[in-house]
Image 1 (cartoon, rainbow, N blue to C red):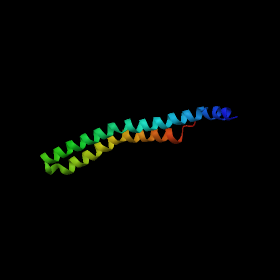
Image 2: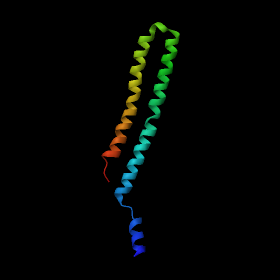
Image 3: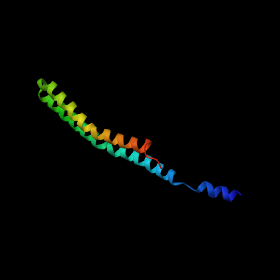
Length: 93
């Protein structure tokens, strides 16, 4: 009887495998998907600081342009978040 119980507990159904793959995929999606926006926003922020240091009178224009560029760069991170959430909550095994 004990051998049969062990054998039935060792069986993993396809739903468990699909669920684990979805969770792993969601983690990879957010991990890799956050690299691009992080680099892009840091680069834009650094260049904006350099520009403001060189020409302080253009602070308003440079800040507005920087925020617009950061929002565009962040959109890829948001797409990654949407895909990760879809993998976590929508995909069924």
